[in-house]
Image (cartoon, rainbow, N blue to C red; front, side, top):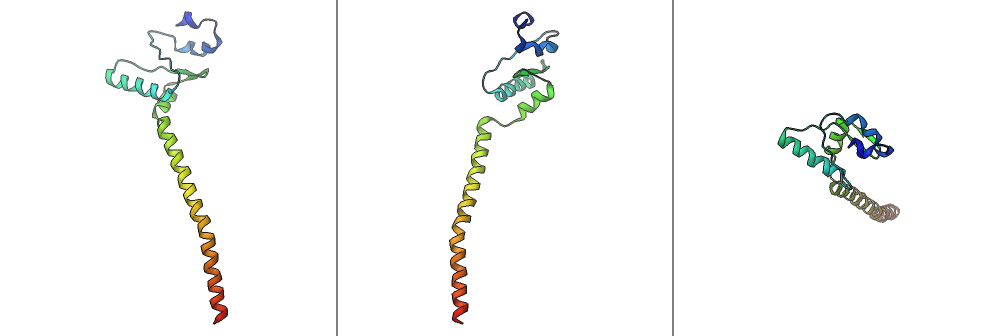
Length: 116
């Protein structure tokens, strides 16, 4: 790996991890899913250890990798956002619907108080 990345600044931050025997997981796309798969492999095999990683030129330590693995999947996050937006829209619709009803009740109450 050291030969493959020699002279390429994109990978230069990876140098501290290139000691001893290494395996590399190169991911394009769902980084969280890949990290979860590696963590699952580690748990099953009990023979490997994550030293760190490189994400968009930034060196990540073991804690950073664990934090990425603990994140919900993209689909779950999108569902949570959609649920939040739906709840907000529902509250807004109820609030907008309540304005005419409240106004009608107030007018009725005012009319009844004038007739009394």
